[in-house]
Image 1 (cartoon, one colour):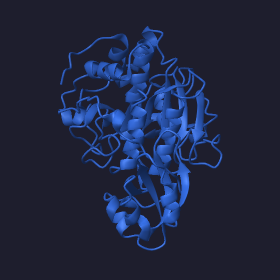
Image 2 (cartoon, one colour; image 1 turned 45 degrees about the vertical axis):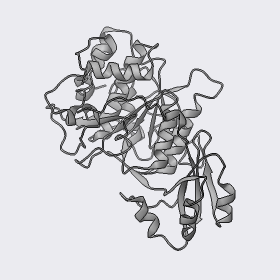
Image 3 (cartoon, helix red, strand yellow; image 1 turned 90 degrees about the horizontal axis):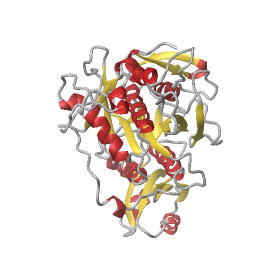
Image 4 (cartoon, one colour; image 1 turned 135 degrees about the vertical axis):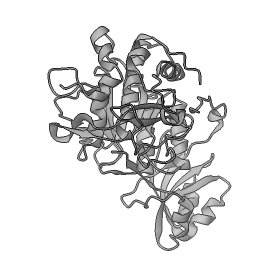
Length: 392
């Protein structure tokens, strides 16, 4: 059964926590309690969610220090003596204390994937290119000078210079090209080549800390509160996955409250859908092969909302190059790009209307709903308005 789109009536009442960032990352664990319980000496980096009173005094009294604060997410990222964690958790103003875990990246020719989702029919038969729609790719940054990419801009939370979001890894550039590689005479073409794409660098390697993810989300939210009405992020593409995090959930709900469409890779472990894709307010995307089968590595389950091409996808890469990569990381920007393309054709639609439109235009490729959700994403039908009657 596909993940049901639910308007969380309690979202407005939820309190969001601000968290900080560190150079020393706590190793990934499926059980955050285990991570903290094993660190009983020395300092440990934690994310602290709080209610109304800022926990600064409590942190200082415990012998800790704040490393980062967020403007729109009520979390602080702090360093604490490991022995003080339990006492801070018992503070009535503290919602949770969790380690700063890491997430992992889930790794002009017309690429078969862009062809399979029928984006080229939109390019050839309409004027819709995604123009006027802002999308943020939360990833390893972007190749700032790639000849096949036109950036609206970028921001780094992982570098000391926020204006240096140059991609040293390649993953972020690859995902960005799937969304918006220019429709020109060179390289490849993306699903929505005319959109306004922003590189939000949340890591410079294949590991991403939760604290940096939150900082990237906070930046996206800030675009809705600055003086520029033309840079509001409408879609966030997130090609990373891992276990559940209360702090990350808080930040994502804050973005959801801004009417931002959240799209995430289901994960590459071949098991149950991972986070953040597993949330009901996030679109979980599985990966397909060129034969319309579910890719063996792709996570699956009732949370899956759509399936999209993810295996052997040719796209832009760091250093002005191109590369073939596979993963739900590649499927996620396929869907994010289709959402942008559809939104450019229906600029008056809300986030939830775009999400429903994608549901109603997905292509049934004969897989179980745990594999395909509402079907293979269909950029042409979503943009030009041919529905398939999906109501599950």
